[in-house]
Amino acid sequence: MLDPSAESDTDVLSRGEMQIVGHFVHGSNYTFLANLKLGSRQVQAVYKPIRGENPLWDFPNRTLAKREVAAFELSEWLGWHLVPPTVFRRSASLGAGSLQLFIEHDPNRHYFTLTQSEIQLLKPVALFDVIVNNADRKGSHLIFDSLDRMWCIDHGLCFNREEKLRTVIWDFAGEPIPLSLLEDLSRARAPLIRGGELFNRLHSYLSIAEIQALEKRISAVIAAPYFPFLPPGRRAIPYPPL
Image (tube, rainbow, N blue to C red):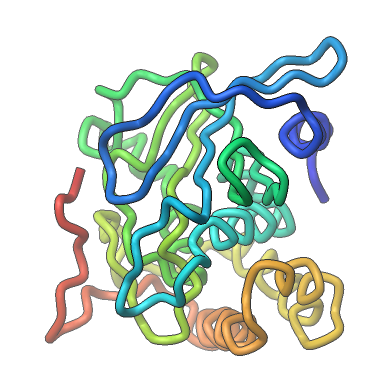
């Protein structure tokens, strides 16, 4: 279930009057900063139009924006609230794309600046990346808002059917997954079956085969509840790592 703040933010993202005010120049796809206004509420958002996506050999074309939304939907369903409110908007300034609430943050604070005690808080993030098969968890994709709340961003390269996990977070390799997180995964497994509520929510953004692969990854984690080790024989840390 969405928390109340997420519901109001997603409403503004979905229906608010939109104006592009900036362009993020770093990154391989076109990404913009937008202002949105709905009634008395105003927010800023990161806008990723489908037409600005560069083709990739290992992900279906024109799907990255929808994967951003699927990551938000799954995080909310699990109750982990890791991903800023994100919607898919068909009518937007440069065409259909994802809109994610912009989080004001210090870009100099990220995974590589965390203390050892702060790193211990990342177990939900590490597990989330395993189940969504995140192919690009860079250190700068962990950000902190003015209240010191951590958020995870950039999930366009997730939910591939083939194993693609590439992340900087390997701190927990071999450790048991906390019971509370396993219980959340168990609660999500049944609704992921075709026709279930979570399946229906994700099917707006992912293929049936990708949702089935997600369910298999969740089942595998429940069956062997340990954080994975670095896989041999392939690159498992994104480049650049930050």
